[in-house]
Image (cartoon, rainbow, N blue to C red):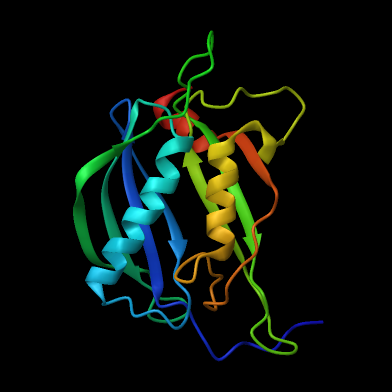
Length: 196
């Protein structure tokens, strides 16, 4: 059983900030352990790449407007915002909405993954990329997952996360795999605070 704590740690995360129907959302991916979080020009390119992959899974009411870097200095220490910058051209969602369904404020689609051990017996962590997706996918009763085949945009995002050499890492900064499905749910906290 893997239980050796890896000597590496993710330097932090890259976040995208977007609004959908006036509600602010954030999504983030951890950077790999060997990435220089302070290399702003390189991280700007990474942010643009991630936004270009994320936009097609969001509906047209969603606009990705800023990106930010958050450090993760040590275990138990909250992440700290290091940098934030608006995109020169905001990225508007382009997923077609489902006819006859509202743009749900609390409906999420999530990609999940697991780190790949960086050495024999190394512990691994999980990762999640949670997006508020409006009505780009239609909730199906008694199901918790969509197959990736429901959307080419989700397939492209998943494939890119799996091979990216900068982000999609676990807590230890180890590159992760991506599961071949999309978890979906109505976010309970969002339902309580902003409605359906």
